[in-house]
Image 1 (spheres, rainbow, N blue to C red):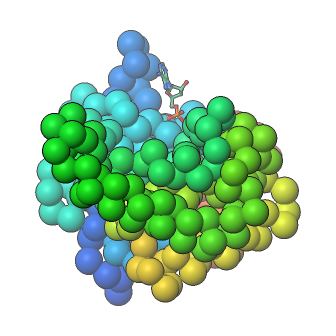
Image 2 (tube, rainbow, N blue to C red):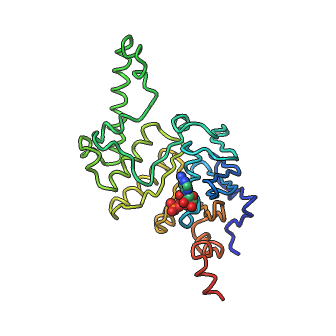
Image 3 (spheres, rainbow, N blue to C red):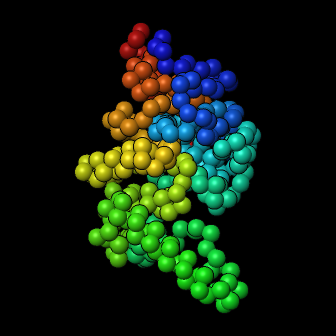
Length: 279
Ligand SMILES: Nc1ncnc2c1ncn2[C@@H]1O[C@H](COP(=O)(O)OP(=O)(O)OP(=O)(O)O)[C@@H](O)[C@H]1O
């Protein structure tokens, strides 16, 4: 057995001791869809300052865990703490307001709006949304819109998307749409960003930019990341620690090189093929 943390599925807790405080604490969550157990008493933690990878074979339950954390699907049982606050069962917008943000496997841009407008739409506690504010506090509303626009322009510059700011979002390439998704999270200065397959459908040069951006946002702005990714090169380059899920639970957690050579991870990925080759 390697030094990667090998966990009993029912007691899957803990992480390497030499990291920052626990930012996200997923405690024993379960989610069934009819007779199918998608998440099976899964526990995991994400420590502040890390870029944590969440990997596992298709159907392991990774996206369902993301949906549970971000309020898109409530878990049937278990608890989720973010910065020590119980966020279990809160709505997505309430969780977003805690500065826990996510991107989607398939980007969800507003195609008929410009790239700049897509960013300006991100809810940043806009006072103009209340009708009486729009009537009686017009100056304040205008100032906030200006601040919002300045923030959006800064995000676009950071992500090197300024040249497409007036383009319809529908016209962006797959990689640019992923960058726009990342940009939406940056509108609220997030604490934790969950990225669902940031490398999927992205060409090599844009993938390099996305990886560089994630690294810089982590080291320069102190943003913590949890990302699901099937592209192992990206995971190995970017993530530490790496959490492996299988059959709805955390199987192993550890540094990427240890996880890669872990026997139970190989078995989980290769399943029957691996067992047959061994015998
Ligand atoms: N809304 C749903 N209704 C019914 N079954 C679902 C639903 N969402 C997910 N599942 C099932 O739950 C299981 C876990 O799915 P999930 O998408 O969480 O896995 P995953 O690890 O993210 O897989 P992938 O890597 O292929 O995206 C799968 O068997 C999937 O078919």
